[in-house]
Image (tube, rainbow over all chains, first blue to last red; front, side, top):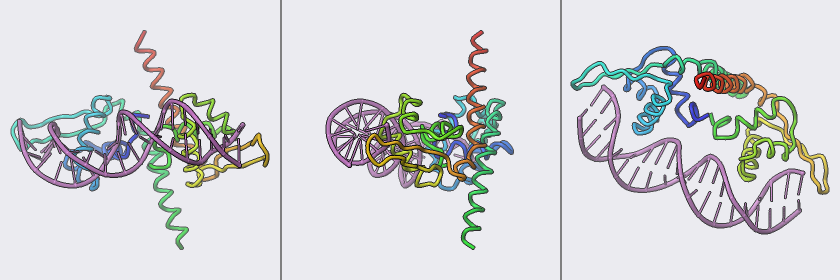
Length: 98
Length: 98
DNA sequence: CTGTATCCTTGACGATACTG
DNA sequence: CAGTATCGTCAAGGATACAG
């Protein structure tokens, strides 16, 4: 799906499952994502109705938070399945190296 | 993940959940996939250990079948979650158009 | 702090022709 | 039947500089 495809969308969504996050939290959480890519994905997912963007200040420094919408939460089963599988994969690799 | 990313890998895997399939079955099932793309994805997924390729004849016409490996089957939870979500999404769109 | 603008490279994918 | 080879196009993503 276009909703969760790409290299980063699923990762961003996982960060937002547990709680609202600020732009900088997302950026620091995914150290290797470029600002451009993060920004584009956030806008796309907002346009898709998966996340909600809220601005809390009018004058710099800005404070912006992103959170999942109800529609975004409907992806949780997929995201947790992905995350579980990824964890199992990592464990398997470690076991094989014993 | 690189394992199920791209436009087609998940679709191919879903075709293989229920049973072994021949190359032509896959090709006809996904009418809009190019031969090149199907072939590349099958080889990649075979290299990743997700599917197994078996040749049943030596002389043309060839008969080749693809099936999920045990590792490939470990993706089932993700694939079914994806498929359920896609179905729900389609239903929602229909309901909204009433 | 939260982005946007610009430039650039790579890779994904399609169309088509051809081979064992 | 089951692919491979070749060519072309477009979108995804990174790096960096700059803006509100």
